[in-house]
Image (cartoon, rainbow, N blue to C red; front, top):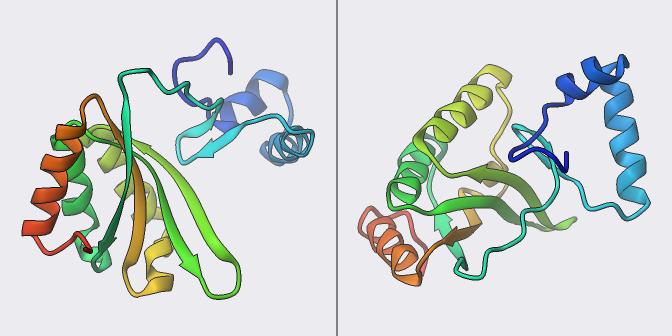
Length: 158
């Protein structure tokens, strides 16, 4: 994973090491238990990206139904914002976070394709559409512009 720019799919690791996908999942769990920082993203496993000195991060609060997920993500990436994760607050478990790492329309389409093909529920379905995103951009003004567009579309929570 160190030599890769992006995530490494579990199926690729399984093929490379001639083991089952389940074996990869178990080995990654063991590595994490040993305090190795490995992220599991929808695209595969990756080491955490080092935040570049010029990157600005923010957490934004949103609320919308599943039918507006594509619109929300397009607003963000079209403004040059990378969506790092989605977070919901669960009454029993507390904070639940899912890694997204979406930074382009192609990433949005990949995410939507996986969502539709798996028929999985979005994390925001647990909280009536309320969720947070950790976002990152090269300048704070980029995030502000995206937030203004989300606000004008009734997606941003204030």
